[in-house]
Image (cartoon, rainbow, N blue to C red; front, side, top):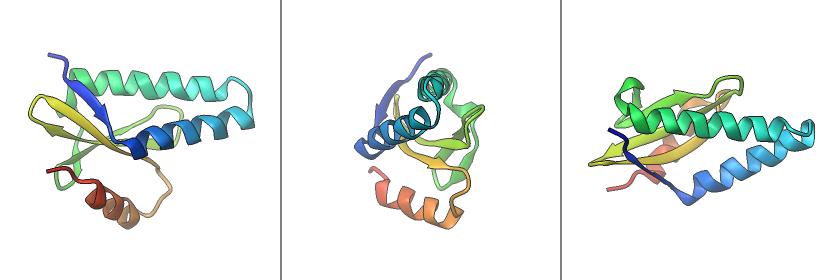
Length: 104
């Protein structure tokens, strides 16, 4: 079963920001990042329980090749993507941001 995916607006902004950063570093690298991001989102939608809970009800999917992680929650039949964070960030700041983005 494939779940519906919903992105919080902050995540959409982060995806665009990261894309622009990689594309500025090396033309085409931003496109590769987007392919990897959306491939990971597709995998999440097919089997969200495969990924571990890391904080409260938030689960995490690490991107291949890029040092980012996708944080999401399962709400009924929907997956809510609540964060895209660089893996070098302080875990406490990630938890604080996720807490602020928690949906009822």
